[in-house]
Length: 169
Length: 178
Ligand SMILES: [Zn+2]
Image (cartoon, rainbow over all chains, first blue to last red; front, side):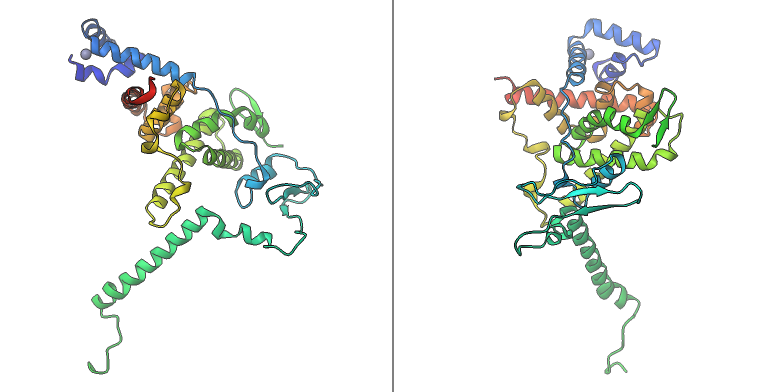
């Protein structure tokens, strides 16, 4: 076996996934080849590094981020939420909380009433603030436009789907 | 309260969430390379899992089932990101720092090199490597999770290790060792 053939067998060799015959061939090659040996040493090291990679903690579910996301449903469906949460607390971000009534099978979001006439809260949560939804809408628009052009300049002339002009009549 | 009966245990959904939210979050984070998006996708994963609970096959290992949902959720997001990246006027500033933009000079520790090397390798191999090394999945569990044959797992892991080694080495030489 040459290095090129052994290269693809080193990973299953490490995981003990080779047939007895393949295993023997790789072992024989490794006794002679320093390059493949170095690769195997690396694989072992990287496996250990990956296994020890520190785990990051997910950010706690923050109400400020839940507007319009399916995560708000998760909060509702998995956690009992307090019936009344004080809304008087001063927050830097627009505050609201999810409240649920266990007897009724729905949830609602409450928004504290703004003191002054500022931008209504609903404006800040409408689709064009939601980047993903906005991009989906633009894509849909683009597709509609594309098809219209395709129809006008290709389909219609090709199949004579047009009103004859007065000269032609 | 909805309970899940598996071969090993009987679970409430809260127990499942508490037990798996951190590993799933880390797995998804390494697949998409963006912490904020990983938060959202982790929530989506558990929401889908919660809704699919009644249909869950009792013979399936709970972890394999959850990671399958997580993998599909992350892949969908990556596909969407590619599609959106194609739009000319999209907001580039908010795209996660990904792949080529990582500056090796700023990478200083082994952990950072490992994460950067993961980000640079092909996504389908990344999933297999993470499941094997981080979650301790067997070949057959990876096959179930990624919905591929066991021979495919062998190939994926082999390619994954080759690719990871390539990227790790180049990062290490490019500025990791100061
Ligand atoms: Zn060799």
